[in-house]
Length: 442
Ligand SMILES: [Zn+2]
Figure (cartoon, rainbow, N blue to C red):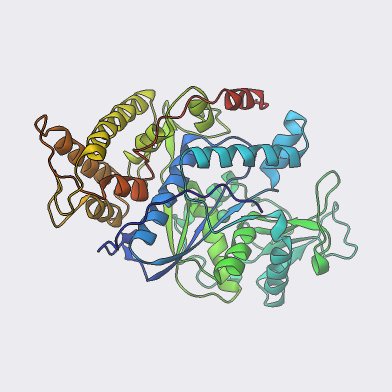
């Protein structure tokens, strides 16, 4: 499907860093799979923190001289989308189209580098049908008939069998005693009659009245389950288990665990790593659609916030941390941005003498300092500190001192942190404000 607009990333000299993420060194060739949105509501700051986290991964991996293949999906058909569309009385396809467009606008404003392939669930249905058919063939899946699925060409719903995966319990990322409760909380259906085990996940949902369905070949008409969607997309576009599978920490279980289990059953035993981004809270609660306590990126932008300041406010927190948003953080980020912009203006008007670097060691250079911080499990707060020190040093120069300037500093901030210090702040987008306000809300 369509992707959002590419971002121009300045080239940097090869940086001498060996990134370690989540305690693991990265190989020379990295594949990245990031679980994308279900397009039924606008991008809030929790989403932004997730997609910005993997934007830093993308920028770091490429700057370290590694190759990267990057896929992100969009779950453009699933229960939450259909439920929301019914609730607000719009066609689910229109809701998905509108929310995907708003997501793209947010990603473009934040200068997030797009994935190589942005892949939808609907367009991936043949991949899912193929994967589910293979799981049935090896005994890792089974049909469950229901009164609503009288059969016909297909066999009803299809469920994955957790008992067929020898590593399912060993690899479980949460205590086994919590698994059932978390599964039920996060879209699972432990009480569904006919399942062999309560944790068995849905792979294929047979057609129901008033629900969209697609030709599933041997499975009959229906639509994909969520975990198999990501497994099938990763298998097709990245050749199996991604080097890094990423998403919010609420995807750890069941979503990423189930997808990894499906991939093992599909013949991909290779190990991968997951990176999970901490939840962003507001007023003592996780920011979530169900609680309605959302700070939307598009609303901040419509109100005139500089997207660079939004980036800085979020990057001030380590990706794995759980933290609380308050508006004061945006004010502080705007102040920090102003400090950097003032330094960049001086840097832009100073002679560019390679090797001279106020505020950083000659061996360093700002690019290396920032990349070194990011290479240490994506320590974005330390990366921001490094730029602060560079800006302090530039601004502390006596007036009239032409000084010397790290020729790559502004490029480094742009390439590694996605902040263009050469650009003017964007004007508030009134068209966007109207668009945001016209979206139906609860
Ligand atoms: Zn996913």
